[in-house]
Amino acid sequence: MEILLLGLLAALVWKLYQWKRSPHDAPLRSVTLCLLCAALSYPVAMPGGASGVDTVAGHGTAKLIQNVLLLLAVYFLMCFYLYSAADEESGRRRARKEGVLVAVVAVAITVAAESVPHETFAGSFSTADMTTPQIAFFYGGAGLYLMYALGMACRWTRRFARMSRRPHSTGLWMAAVGLGAMAVACAIRAVIVALRAADVKVSEPLMAAVAFLLVASILLFAAGITYSGARARISSLRLWFEHRRDHRRLAPLWELLAETYPDNVLRPASAAALDRRRARGVHRRYHRRIVECRDGLVDISPYLLDEGDDGTVLNIDSAELAARLRRASARIEKGAPAPRRAVPLAMALGSDRESDVKQLIAVSDELRAAA
Image 1 (spheres, rainbow, N blue to C red):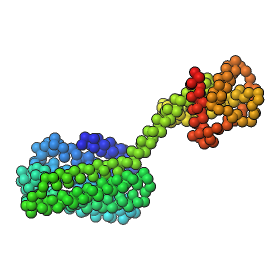
Image 2 (image 1 turned 90 degrees about the horizontal axis):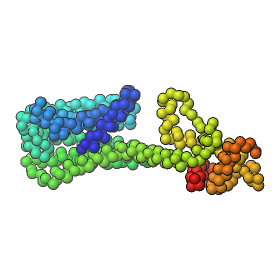
Image 3 (image 1 turned 45 degrees about the vertical axis):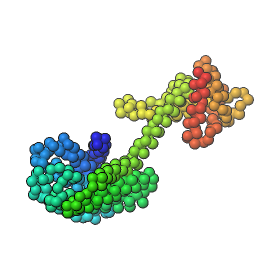
Image 4 (image 1 turned 60 degrees about the horizontal axis):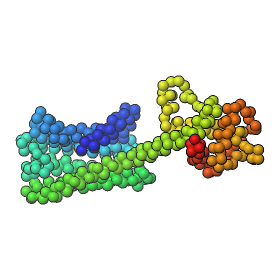
């Protein structure tokens, strides 16, 4: 429960930041309000928060507030799809109609809750006296609206999933299944309310199974809406580690070339703190090191050719190139002039950038091994 609340709060903070930057984005506003209502419902659902609210406002008030917030959460979830799937004016008209419906349901269950003694309204869904018409209407009315709103959201999510590509479609299908399962759980709870209102005993295992289905469907929905973002973040993190590793593996080659040609070392665009901080980023340092290594190899290439080598292209393996780099660096330190013009280096592993980096790393590894 605490993990879900922390994740919900983190998502809410991020959406509030995005909403501040784009205050006129209707779908974003709907998602933010949905998360806000869901986050506010958690404290009043927890034992400590519920008892505090009930102590101040009377028994059952926390339960009423929680259910009204859940109604608003699923309403704003519907609004997200309405603003996203239709034109702006049509979405606004439909959202107003749905707003009237959720307001009617919220007022109706509030009247039902306030029309019975607080002692009667106390307790949970499994212990409530459904033979009292107001209690049955409270749980049944809220459950039916949740079933309707979640069912519609499931339908629209499936539509978006069909139009999307992986990995977005995978997350949308997970969210759609979660929404559908939540709608089914709400429908089963509505049937249970009707049976208990008719004084028919419902078995405890069935009640527990429905509660488990509801929790599992919420978790599946949460996993679905975060799937594509989490996958992108994992891929980004993997790339970060790869660039960090390759940056370190290139160190021997870079150090040799940077000592020989210090002017090739790139500096931040300015002395400003922001530019210096950006220059220290892993990706920037990685790409900068590749450029500096390639520039250094071009500058040192005249010293790498032996007497019998072809003077147009230098095509040797990594171990031999590493050995020649050490000898060339020593000659440059002694002040030997360049014996010829710069020559290109052959790309033994391919002509794309990835192959270029692999070749640089191979040479650097040879230098490290020799050291």
